[in-house]
Each structure stands twice: as C-alpha cells, then as structure tokens.
Image 1 (cartoon, chains in turn cyan, blue):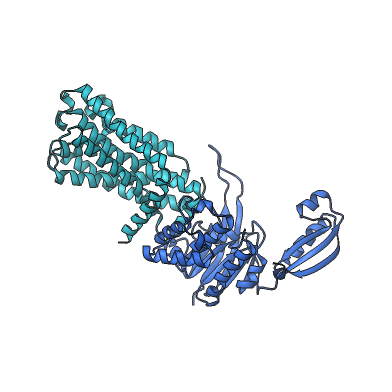
Image 2 (cartoon, helix red, strand yellow):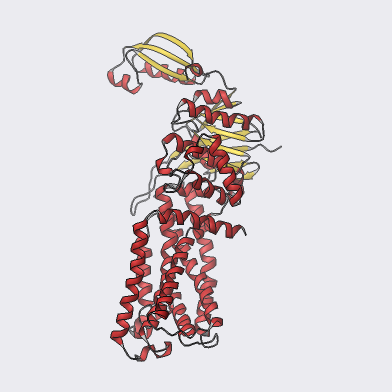
Length: 268
Length: 298
C-alpha cells in the first residue's frame, strides 16, 4: 500500500513537471510515429520471409516491432535512474529527498516510474498501430510471455540501479550508460537476429539479458511458443535476475555509504 | 532518559579529492573536532559561531547526509551512522538551500510530494501542507510555481517542509536568513509555541542574534569545530565602535562605515572581543564605544 502511494506521488510529480514542457511531449509523439513508419518501410523493402527470421514468424516488421518495444524498456532501465539522479544532483533536490524516511534505493527506483509509464504507452501505441494499421498478426502465449516480462524487468531495473549507483559516486557517467545502450542495441538483437552477427561476436550477445528477453518474447508473441519452447531464454533470464538483483541492492548500499563518507551526496 | 541529540568525541574531516592518477596529500579540513554535546528532549538550542565553525556540518551529520570520521552522534538514542533511515523518520531538516525544490511545481505540490515521501498519506499530506502554508503566510502563493517565489518565500517553504511530518527533532539551518522583519516574525511565531510546548527538540544554526533570545533556552557556540561555550541566551547587544588608524583595506575588511563600525554580539562578548582584537592587531585604535540592544534595533 505504501509502495503504491509512493509510486503515485512520483508519477504525479513527474506528470506536472513533464507536461509543463509541452514542446517535448509533441516531439516525443512525433518520434514514436516516425520509428513505426521507418521500420514498416524497411519491412516492405526486405519483403518475403528471410531465413533468419523463420523462427520468429518470418516477417521483418513484427520482428522489429517487438524489438523496439522491449529495447525501449531496456534503454529506460539503463538510463532513467542515472538521468533522474543526475537531475536531482544538479537541481539540488537530491539531499532534500535523501533526508526523508524513504530509503535511497526506493527513491532511485521510484524516480523511474514516469519513464516506465511512458515506455508502456509507447509500447501500446506500437502494438496498436502495428495491429490495426499495419496488419501485424500476433500469436500470443500469455504463460510464456508473462515470466519473460517479469524476469526481464527485474534484470533491467537492477542494471539501471547499478548504473545509478556508479553515477552517485563518480558523478558523471551518462556517456557510459549511453554507450552501454548502443552496445546492447547492436548485440542484443533489437533490429536483426543475433544469428546474423559475426561468429566471434555472438558470445557477447549471450551475456546481455536483452537478447534473451527479445528471443523469449518474440517467440511467445509472434509464433505462440509455450514456456517449454523458450526454457533456454527463461533460464538465462532467471539466472540474470538472481545475480543482478542482489548486486543492485549491494551497489546502492555501497554507493550511499561512500557518498556519506566523502560528504559528496549533493555534489555534481 | 536518553538525550534528544547526543554527540561524543564527534570528528568530521573533509579530505581534498585527488587529481587524475594522484591521491591528494592535503591534510583535509577539520569541520568538527572532538565535539561532545548533549541536548535534552524539549530543549531549543541555538547553534552559533563564525562562518566555518562547523554548525552546518553538525546539522548534516545529525541529518545523516554526512558520516562522522570518528566519534558517535545519536538522535533520540539512534546512531546516525548505523541506522540512518530510523533517524530520518525522527528529524525534520531545513537545509537552507533554496534550490532544493522542484521549480515547475507549485509550493503546495512541492510540500505534498515531500510529505508523501516522508510517509504521510495523500490526504494527510494535503491537509498538513495547507496548514503550514497558512501558518507561514504562504497560503496566497500556494498555487504559484516555486520558480516564482522570492528568496524569503523559498526560505519559509523550506521551514514548512522540515515540519511536515511533525518530527520530534528539528534541525534548522539559518531559518531566518534572507527574511524581512514581518516574515521573520512569522517564522518565530510558528516556532515559539511549538518549542514552548516542550514536545519538540530543536537545534538551530543561526547568525540571527535575536532568534537565540526569542526561542532558544541554550546557546552553544562552536569555534573551529570545537565547543567554545554553552550558555543561557542573553540579550543581544549591538555595539557602535568609533575607530581610527586603520588602512583602507582593513576598514573595508571590517566593513567600517565612515569612522564607525557596527558589531552584533549575542550577549556573550565573543563577537565584540574578536572585532576588538582585529582592530588592535591591525594597528587601529578604538576611540569610542556605544551599546544598544540589538533586539530593539530589529
């Protein structure tokens, strides 16, 4: 109950704040529309059913659609907590929030709520436009998709909190988060299957939770694969969640103690 | 009964950060040096001393933002180093940083948000925020964006934020700085009954001589991070010193106007003694002294 109240408080704060920048909202909406048209056109250019896409239903546009939707969540997880933390450092609100009864880890995680909400709206638009206007045919297996979504979110949020812990200590690391985002987009198989990567580069993909999330979710939503069919992806995601979640908790604890020791919480 | 605030041999040293590939060898700045104090429940203590004496650092340690380098600090028996979240529930902190609000939110929206992350329900948060805005003369500006607030209004909103969750311990950094007479009275009017009831303990860092007499029942003076004196609040004095023999630079440094220099003293003689020492060591001479009650002047 308390957690829900906190989520609402953060969402309300960011709703007021973000909607006060009206031009940005318009630009974001245009960005979503442009991405859809871009990948729909590439899908038509590619045409047919390329061999590497067979296991995901064969068509490029639905493949890219799921890729864009999931990578949106991944990018937000990786960058959002760090960005919000940096914003709070530079505007001076970090110390004021830090001296309240909400623990620092919660503050960091909750500050990303708005960005997740936006990602969800973006996802709904992608899927809605894809189905209604561009004729994408989903074959959805909810029992396979649900655990993939939950395990992926745990891993993604944990990665974001680890990145934010680094920013808390070193103050400037936004470029590292952006670089991480680019690397995972390339090696995670967002826009093409990882089987198209050079042989030597594929092991990198297997280390990125995004590639397992995409593989599992594409099979569960495009060809109706069941939990047994995607057990490899589920296992990889479970291991990643089990490793990353405690690591995130430890890194926030470490970073908070470190800035208290240095007296540098509000520095930027 | 455990004191509300207690420090034992509390020391805080700020180290200089190193450069690329080079650790700093500078000895660091000692902000608090072996400080031991105890503040009983219900006491209101004015924390005074010159700039750099360690007042703000002490408040930052007690509000869990900064860890002690050595020694112990406790709030209502809870150690600030080992159980910071429990301490944060017990304290209300006014940082004195007017940037620490969300500029595109209104005053009311800001307070409601901070009240909610302090643990109040939305309904309680709205009620309490409106109550405090009213008490601090900000009700008319409640729905105005924080970016449009004057410095004094931001200062008062900071005090309101510290009091949102009715904490048993208040840690206030310069609550009357930048306020005009009317708004200063409003702040004191809010603090006085609250502190007179005895349920709330307050530690107030301030340069405001009148504040110590109006609300405090004890004055702690820090110098170089150490406890210099602890005393009953006395009527503050303003001294007008007529001086001669100072160079232009010395006069500018001491803010001498014509041949007269104003010194606000908390009534313990420290500020006066320090100023006299500066004048004499600079080769100046004091040719006349006049004393007036500082509170009356305000």
